[in-house]
Length: 380
Image (cartoon, rainbow, N blue to C red; front, side, top):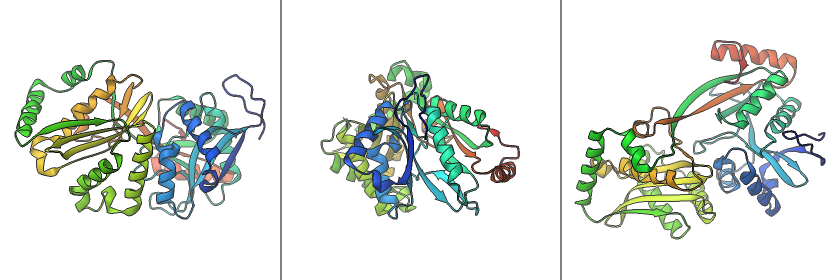
């Protein structure tokens, strides 16, 4: 690959895109480069950082079908995205390349060093053109839509030009405020609702010794993690066999990811305890300038006291932490609880992009029209 220019600054050394089995990049030197990339990325995505993505791959990709696409220059990583060739597209037999996200990964956009956003997309789309195989298109799920990575992709698609479409778009609760947690809560909830929460807090305290635990280090992380797994499994997710503990791979991922995040100072743990036992817990990943509410659970036996809501009220204090400008809820659209008092929204989209020859691109255009009801006019 020829030298690539980043935001007006010429690059002297060769910049190349490496795409291959993720196990080949699981070395000490690669991990250092990977962690440096996360610090230099123009937008945070903890789910593609080494301490989360590698445990995900080890637990959920035992056969090594996922490839890492790494843009690098003289040992420095400039961009990263996990990819997998998929024979089915949401149940339909339509082979395609897809950015790899699993059910417990809540953002699918790549890590890209500042200034190299469009260079990464240019290199990746060129590789996909040359290695389309039987894939009819590329699919990018759960991509952010309001930052430099999105804008660089839109610019690259326009410059080529290349057919593309946003096939699904959703918004989820985001907390972004310059006021105190108390002021935000007062503005978000009615006087009646705040009074009801205070009443529930008092009634809950009558049940025993009530305490709020907030931890940002790794002390006791193994015990806390097991308590969380047990608490989540005790509720409806356990009965539906969808809790983290219901399957060994997801439980393993959770244990390893929380331990790694805690050891790096990237995890805030919150718990409401009654007589020392957790009745509501929340794990939040710190990824300055933001944070991501990763997993929460509460004891359904205490649902009449709204322990999950009380815990989220405590979690608002994170916006007062220096360096944290926003918190992504990682929740679904129209979430019945968090949407009530997290007023801002983050838009997340799924994009499909044409790759390969002109014939293949024409075929994609027809498929896209069938899916969306309109010609692929670019990403939203």
